Amino acid sequence: MRKKTIGDLRRRYSGVLGGMIGLVMSSAALAGDFQVDLAPENGEEAWRFRITPYVWAAGVSGEFSQFGLPVVEVNQSFSDVLENLDFGAMAGMELWRGRYGLFGDVSHVRLSGSGNVPGLLPVVVPVSATITNTTGMIAGQYRWLEGERGLVDVLGGVRGWSLKTSLSAGPPVSQSRSERASWADPVIGLKGLAWLNESFYLTGWAMVGGGVGNASSVIDVMSGVGYKINQHTALIFAYRYSAVDYHTGAFVNDSTQHGFGLGLDIRF
Image (cartoon, rainbow, N blue to C red; front, side):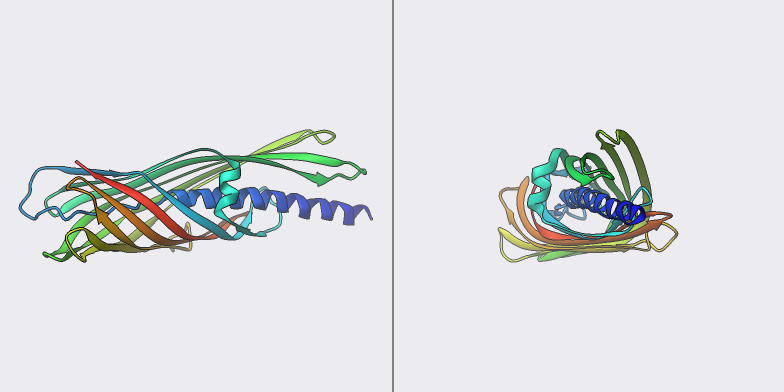
C-alpha cells in the first residue's frame, strides 16, 4: 500500500508540474515574429530597420517531463496562460542593407501557479511553480526574388531556448527544487510577401531545423494577411504552427503550438 500511495503522489505531482510546463510552453507561443518586409528597393544602400511587437494567442499540446518525473501529456488553451501570466515581453526585428539583412526575435515570459497534491498522510500538500522561458532567434537573410507584386527571402540562423522551473512544496513536506534546460538549433527557411492591391498583401514563412544533436526537429510555419497603414506601419493578422522535439536525459519537451496572432510592423 505504501508503494501504491507514493506512486499516486508522483503521478498527481507530475500532473501539476505538467500543467505548469504546458502553460509556459503555451506562453512561449507569444514569442513569434509577425514581421513583414515592406519590400526595400534593390538600389537602396542605406540601412533600414523595423521592429514588430506582437501577440500570439496559441494553445499547446505535447509531452513534457522534468525533475526525473514520468512523462505527462499536456493540452492547454491560451486562456490558461493569461490566468497565470506574471510578465511577458517580446519583439521581432529586421535590419537590411541592399539585398542582405539580419532577422531576429526575442521573448521573455514568466508564469506562476499553484495546486494541491495528496500527501502520505490524510492531508494535502500545497505545491507552487514558477516558470521562466526565454527564446530567441538570429538569422542572416538574402533577398532572393523581388518584383512589383511580391518578394521572397532566404534565411538561415540559430534559434535558442532557455527554460527554468522552480517548485516549492509547503508543509508538511517543505521542499524546494529548480531545474534549467537550455539548447539551440540551426534553422533555415523562406519567407515572402505578395501584394493583393495597394493596401492588402499575403505574407508567410516556412522554417525547419534541428537534427544535429539538440532538438531532433524544429518546425515553424506562418501565413497571414497584412494591411499597410502607411509607408512606415502595417498591421498583420496571421495563423502560426510551431513545433519542437527536444529530449536530453530525463528532460522532455515535445510540444506543438498553434493559433492566431496579431502584429504591428513599424519601419524606420
